[in-house]
Image (cartoon, rainbow, N blue to C red; front, side):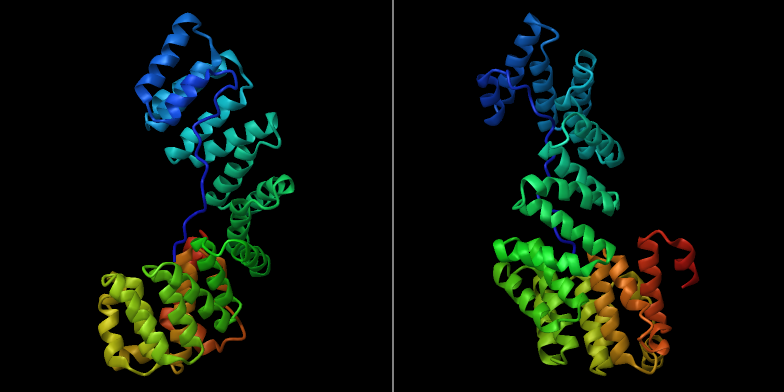
Length: 363
């Protein structure tokens, strides 16, 4: 269920507008040696020539020589302290080496210099999303959309932030609009199906996942989503068929085994459920799954518990613990179901993902 994170602009920096066209062409064609020679020649003639310094930084960044790239950008900042290109380049390097907090600070600096920079706004929104600063993601993406209201990537970032916050209404609005405009954007199609699951619109969810399977017949997340939607609709044969299709594509995928195991539990088919859980990952394969153990794990309402587990696990796999907790702690669900062992384990996982460790330990 882990969707792609949109199109990420990890530009190593924007070279000065006066850099010669020849050097741009060399870089664009990935003729890195010629580009390097051209930049170096320019710097021999004028050591403080900022476009060439930035150009070398960009070149090193493209070649994943991040330390050298960083040196160039710092050198550029010594010459021009408020160079937005150099700060953008540093931010790009920090992103590439996984230092997202520092990348965000650099993008903020760019935005102080160029408040409407689309590269900085998009990346600030994207990095904020990775850092779970969802309000900041919404703020930056919304500013970007003022001047570019049809920016699909910014709208997808918005939808991810809303989804992570559990704001399914706004997430649904953004995702429906994205898919209406471009049906081939697979991450958005997948997320839209998951939001329909969250909204308990299982017919729409199944239809959405079917659309994605038509786009990509290797998309196991869509197959499992369709299986869960069919399970909730009482379409047991279809639910099994979708899950088996996912296993055909990825036979060793423990998520597929887990979903199919819970579908069998909801059908009281404990023998086949046992077979699935033996392959559903280290936690489950080490548990006993005889009839007495199943009764202990799933309680007096195994069908309801199995359905809830599949739904919650799909949200957890997508990185939406807030949505999983909304489901798992819903007071309208019978207390006996909420207190079943595997439900509480899923609840503990959700709290852990939200870094609410005391609550996780309690579960």
